Length: 541
Image (spheres, one colour):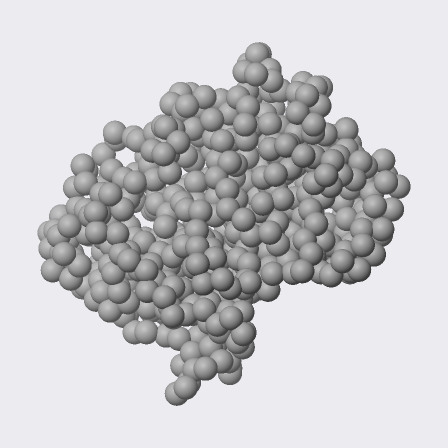
């Protein structure tokens, strides 16, 4: 068991975001924010006073100046409607319970975050006005790691970096699975938003096992085996008895998760990363069709990234180095710039894991599949010193990197980024229409096609980075309009997004139909009749 130290620098220090470290301007808006509907100034003041008595005054922000660290955002929000009115940082589950209870008394809605570093989805911004951020980063204990079962139990404030350091310091041959900004992100927060990583354990919710949840009335729920008298199997068996509940606490506002179990990957004896280069945009459909059977058969066991040249270049280059005109960067310019740094138009990253014999046999199959469609299959020996290959080789073995954050500087220090992530079946035929539609919508609004595809076992995530200059109000307005058109345009084709930023949660929810929304609303009303926990999250009021 490990108990990690709590940051005692105070709430403002704890709220500093990665933008400061990078020297980026995640622009603040000066427009005033309003209280939540039905909350009076007296209610708000009452909650703030009660919160201070629970967690200490230094861990509560209740005015425009002290709440500034929670107003940073990279998503487009021209009207500043997604700004919190305050923040409170509890240090224990008991404090969370008390805060939830007093929130019910004053009808003050709370917006829970783990570390608040989901840069392209809103960070600590709220889905609706007038909410107070329930910042859980002080709850940063690694509660247990079982090296035999390869499991961990962590609190929301634990980062991937903390967990990695723990495994290294204790000489445990276990890997974590990380998203692209792993060092500063939370396994709990990422899993609850159904994020992904790039090892064979890349589907984070699939390898989650057991939760502790503060319910909207302050009661404490333990899912799966956690509520039994001797919960020794809490991190070993996902399902427990009766209805499976863990799923309703992902991408929802039905409770506050204060502990989460997760499975860790035993370090394989052999790890071998690859990249397959293709030179033309139209190669994308053939890549998907070649990759799909390899993923379904688990010959390639990890989540595969097919990185477009524009996205790759944005990690280390600025737009002006690639294209000096205002209109969207053409494919030819991306191709030329990519070739100079050893990249193709599509760069497909995957890895093989196992024994020497297993990896060698799988490599024969993989090489044959991709060489048959004109791909250059390259290994670490071929890509020595290439920073793009090194970045992905690091991710695919659970390594930590912040290099990908560089894309927010694509159009300058203004640092605007919004992820759009529609889902389709992993079929090459699906990519043709998706690429055409994305380029048409982005081009109409004056933005570049900076993109990656992620291939799960059977699904295709079209990960579009909408990159704009947040310091330019006109560019931010265009970005907001473009994102709206992406959501509705792809939604009309049945390619709805699986995850979105706070600025589009209701719009994305509309793509899933009224029956779906009605069921979510009924669960919300039953569990949280005062609508205290994150109203507006995932379009659930």
